[in-house]
Image (tube, rainbow, N blue to C red; front, side, top):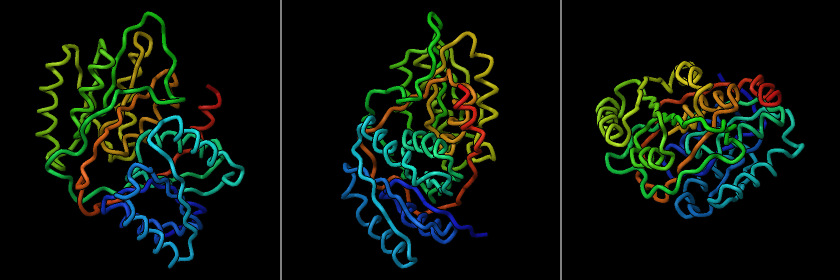
Length: 304
């Protein structure tokens, strides 16, 4: 089934699934405009894919606009706020392609576009496979996400919630930086991409860093992307801990985490950017996942 949308928002990527996914998005959603966020640091790496997207957009009579940013969080936030809070976005039908979108950009885009009263959908294109070598490395200092840093309770210990993925180095950085009293690790369900073997190795490694650790299973590819499983773990801890949460697993878990912070605004989001990315990060394009971001989330944000 196809549908018409006013705009499609994405972040330019060098992976095969970026250009291939955008073509699917155009055929599926028929956007009037494509807004492509381009990180200047990766302009050369993404050039071929960007040209392919612009060409396919032109063939289909779609306006394609680039939004240029650098990898400095305040600048990204300012740029997104300046653009997405413009009255031109009011009550638009918008599709957010999160396939190659950094999680901070996902969370800020969701916030601003919901504030603009947009009817908001998201789509995620899974790769066919990931590199068997390193994916990212040289992790930068972890940080709380700007404008989503929670509400701290004085004198309470820290619980760190990690929705874990393949990037063990990034998770270890989070643990060492925040020094939590309790570590909660959400492990992705399933056998895809050698997941079960990697989970076992990660659990052993985390056990060397912290004693008080609890693991639970989530399915980021389920209908709620693991939201209910996260809430089951987080809710009992709220009175006694300052909770810091990070989404390091499948990208769709960032959607679930956004729902968590709108339901529980005292929870802080954390992010640890990588300085190096494997250009061969993934190959091909796999299944696509999409969903609707419920407008009631905005009501919850406003009330809080």
